[in-house]
Amino acid sequence: MAASHSEQAGVLVLGKILATLSEAIVPLAIVRLLGKADVGILSSILLVYSTVALVLTAGFPETLTFFLPTRTPAERRAIALNVARSLLLLGLLGAVVLVGISVLARFASPLTNSVAGRGHASLSSVESLKYLPLLAIYPIADLPGRMLPNLLIVEQRTKAAAGIGTVKAIGSALAALLPIALQAPLWVVVLSIPSFGFCFGAVLLYYIRTL
Image (cartoon, rainbow, N blue to C red; front, side, top):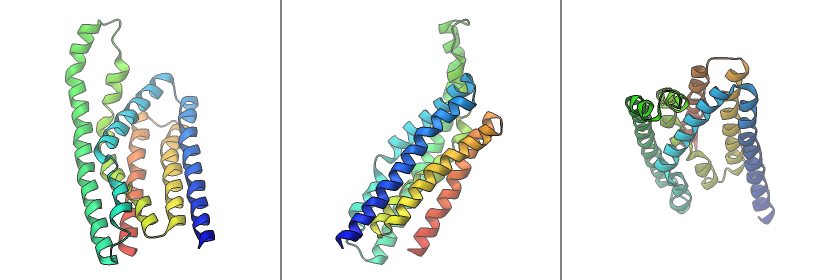
C-alpha cells in the first residue's frame, strides 16, 4: 500500500513538472515568434481571461476532493454532474464578462485617447481587448474541464489525472504555438485556444459517463 501511494505521488509530481515546464516554455516561444505588438496583445487578453477565470472559479473545482470520497458511486456521480453544471454556468457568465469588457473598452477608448492625447495614447490595450469576444467561448469549456484532475484523483485514477494535466498543458501550448509558427493571423491564434478547450471538455464528459 505504501509503495502504491508513493508511486501515485511520483506520477502526480512528474505530471506537474511536465505541465509547469510547458507553461514556462510557451511565453518564451511566443516572444521569439511574434512581434512586440502581437506579444503585447496576446499577453493582455490571456491575462484578462486568467483573472476572470480565477475570480469565477475561486477554488470551486477543488471542492470535489472534500465532498466525494465518502459518498456512494451514485452520490458521487450526482455531485460531479452538479459541479459540472455549476462550472458550465460560470463559464457562460465568464463569456458575458469578456464580451462586456470588450464593449466597454470600445466605448471608453475615445475618452481615453482624448485624455491621454493622440501622441501618447496607448492603442495596444484597446487593440487587445477587441479580441476578447473571440476568446469568450473558452470559459464555457475550460471552467468545467478544471474539475477533471480532482475528479480523477478522488476516483483513484492518479495516473490518468497526471496524464490529463500534462495533456492539457501541452495541448494548450501547441494550440497557441502551432498557428504562430505557421504565421497565421492573430485572430486565428486566439480562436485556436478555445478550440482545444472544447476538445478537452469532451474528455470531461467521457470520464463522467464512464467512471
